Length: 263
Image (cartoon, rainbow, N blue to C red):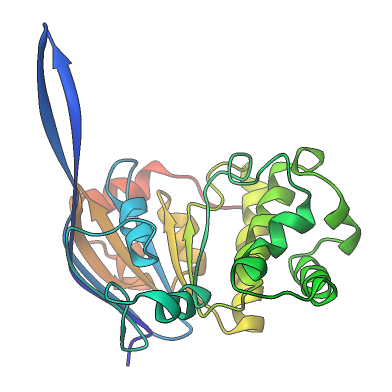
């Protein structure tokens, strides 16, 4: 049974436009009838260029964006129908790692405040317990517990992304959406983060949707790959199949356009 299953997801964004004094609305179909499933413990790599709809899809899966239509289930539970305590329970099991390690951390908060915030939201009242969990997560992502007392601006981009990963893991979720977690980093640091994510997957029994515009990056981490183009999944299959014998012209262009990751 899949851990996560999505069926026929659609999302259209409507924007106001003004041209030559006339106003009107424009519609963009960001996600167009997309279905996918992810097995427990696997990594599904979702690749596509900017604007292909992959970030919108990832955010819909964890209910940061509500779809216009379609269904999402996590361990057989209807994600879109969940309310109240049922939704809080589901949210513990679904977390996201954001693309921008500079914009996703509040500069006014200490690292400890950032990392323990999900625990506070989910009702953990024991401050000492929160602090111990935060220190444990910092060590898990390769940082010293002493970093908890500092602020985000004191760290490099790679270190900030590690802090974001610690925040995502502190609730011990089953499913993680990693939204281009290495695209804002240089190649060598990105390789370190990808290695870290592979290590954490084994340690915490994680299931990933790993979003990227780079097929070589995804090839290293993913079990399967889905290729997204103009809101649709145009090709999906085992990693080796997609990267060695791609069927779609768009997939071939992605392979040709991106450098190898230095692992």
